[in-house]
Length: 386
Ligand SMILES: [Zn+2]
Image (cartoon, rainbow, N blue to C red):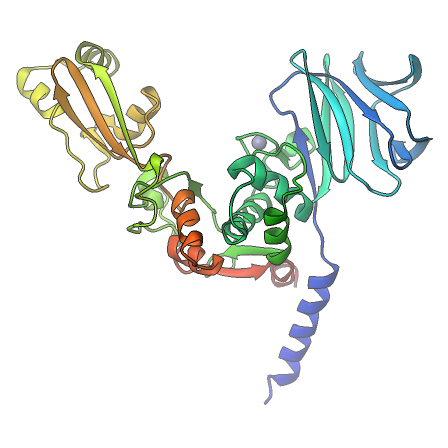
């Protein structure tokens, strides 16, 4: 009874945070590309430009605006006339509607549509473009860019939770560039907004939910395309053992195309590579060992202990996974393998199959991650700020 008033206050606070909390992300767009110019047509609402936190212009609709980089400044033009030169400039529509931009990237024109605000700066000869966007509006775009439009709501819920957890636990990745994350594979792929109902519903129904471990730390929400039938322990791939990234046997991903792969390499190329890279003298008996390498289960980390790791073979030969066996067929070395990707955490194709069989997103998450909890991230803030 003594504790009761206290827990009442706690619950009330959690509710307060849940309703008042929102996170704005700064996403660096067109990462790794040369961005020459950006054009925007003010359409159904007034376009508001802002520079150094002062409103510099409210643009009428049906006017086209273009941005260029000039001597470390952003040049804003409309209908051939220069409106001004700015260190950085931010734009949004008065009614906060989406911003559709034509961008010239590596000399090609691409059209992209973003929610939120767009900030433009000049970096050398090119423009740098940042999307300032609420995290819940960013997530659908990532889901569509990473796994496509055609998945079920339940699978998209799993993906939404993973994308959100990743974003919040990697917010310092691009700190030096004045943003949180980039829009490419280095962080999470993001090509603008998604309007796919199955994606939007999934994000809405998992709003603010993230995955935490037993110490209430955001998890490393690792995923890959196909585990081949058995996922890996985190330390098998990245050294660090994590209690929630444990190997599981996965029977769900075994009937899809990426489950199995084969690669044939001429015998002379294979042994030249091993000799050159690892300074090996390939004797007959060593050749025999190297050509009868078997991995019925994922358990071996070396083709030859301790020098030739499967991980480096995977990188050098662009193999789909480290789970493969080697044998000789005539003059060809045949690598036969399972899965696609590093194999740690969620197997996306297995998760898709689980959702088709009627498993819910919580069951799918609990199958691939051990001892994790779903929590509203506003509550995390409460725990750590108090
Ligand atoms: Zn990045």
